[in-house]
Image 1 (spheres, rainbow over the protein chains, first blue to last red):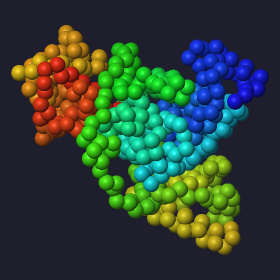
Image 2 (cartoon, each protein chain N blue to C red; image 1 turned 30 degrees about the horizontal axis):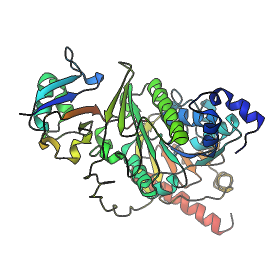
Image 3 (cartoon, one colour; image 1 turned 180 degrees about the vertical axis):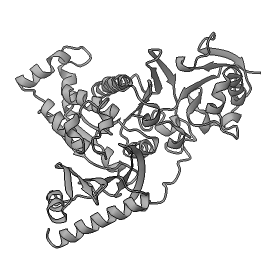
Image 4 (cartoon, chains in turn red, yellow; image 1 turned 90 degrees about the vertical axis):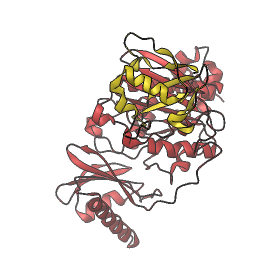
Length: 356
Length: 91
């Protein structure tokens, strides 16, 4: 693999590191990674991986940029509010490093889509904010045998561990009984941007180390970092034969869910907010957003390439992404959010049948 | 009774104690009870109303998650190491 003079100059300060060198830089250029979630953790991580020259970066996120993201998600700025995160991130990363490929996927990750988003990469890096989605990613990584760098942070502390399918403890070995309902969220107890930067730095260091040398300090260990005491502690962790995901008593997959599904998330700017998961990702035609604005006389707030944010019915704000995900702010209930969503999708389908 | 080691992260360390505490315990329940007797405020965080481990903390016995062993009834042996750390899901 050859580098242009421009690329050599771009990466010169890391090529001189004995840990990387020209051979390591080649490994990074050949590498393919997926970063799932580009919020607090994922934002910093994708910037570093892109700048360091990781050849292919798949970025996956279901959400749009909102004001409360900006204190810690430094890929985004005020003018990006309402745009799909993956759209903004892909644009910035390509500007940062034109020698890499960035693949933005505005997808809702769950057990229906997880396998697709982790397939065809050398490593999956965690930028998620809940355990339910991580479980789906963990199981999908076990299935396709792809290493998964689990990481998480809240308040002033965070954790990380590298999961190698069939070798190390998996996420469910580590977090057997952990359920999201038991755990505090950053919207309630907060998160210090610095712990996100710290955990992200560890992700970048360990991910690049693994991509170059196929080894990581975080194999068979759970790292616990706390800013309050500026401490880093390692807990040795082991696979457990009773693990429901990787052990001898693997549980049969749950029954298929009924889509579209509604998830109520934290309020945004004081109003109830619902995210609609369409199940299998849709591929809405590129002209659909301008068509909605023109024909259905909605008030557009943001018209992006991968999503449209608009006012609807007076007091609702809706973001519709190209994959069929919708974020509905201001609905009075899950039922109302679902009904609105079904109406919008039915209208789009009808318009498509008529040739738009 | 087996002599075991309880390892706490600095964030949970007990004032005046090392973050590693040696104690006699025949099952995990003895270790958790001992910890709660020193740090009563951890009681409702560690255990639910039925005395089962809550998932806000993860407990490991020699690196294996206690919930995948026998929970609070997991029997301990000499030199076993019990680690307790907060479970984290944000990002």
